[in-house]
Image (cartoon, rainbow, N blue to C red; front, side):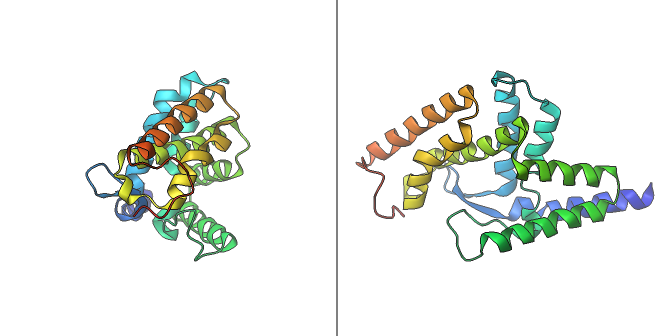
Amino acid sequence: MHNQLIKNIRLLHLMENLKTELRHSWLSDGRQESVAEHSWRLSFMVVLFGSHLDQPIQMEKALKMAIVHDIVVAEAGDLPDFDQSVSQKMRQSEEQRAITNVKSLLNNHVGKEIYDIWQEFQAKQTYESKFIHALNKLEAIIQHNEADISTWVDWNIQHNRKAASDECRFDSYLTELSRLLQEQVDRKLAEVGIHDCMVEKAS
């Protein structure tokens, strides 16, 4: 028991990185968002929306997936989708290495469960994994809408208007949620006189 507790504590120390790793999103008070903050609200969205989907889901699994979906960032770091400094293949390799390290560090059934849940999220074949992928996009839109538009870049505007709809098409409830958030994006842009998604860099 003592040795396993030591391993758990080591993993918790590693997870602190999620509190300090910053995303390409800003909060309404002008502070840059951490990965941990994003993951917390995404997890809350599971609680808020999980019972309204077209198909029943395993809520416990969905919550675990929401919590661990960005666990690899603790080692691999967080790169926004538009950052092409690292190839997709290289990024996937680094993330696979990170989740394997987590599994090896715990070396028990919990480590295997975390590993398996993360792999299920990546595969995006189950309803739960599609749900978390959709929430991942929707939470980012919500955060961008809360931030000052000066923090947006052209990619944000393109992404906020279009990307989430693709992830949400499998479920009518999420599709409607995505539509409402897109309307908020349009209103936010209109407030600063932007009516075309092809705009100059805002920041």
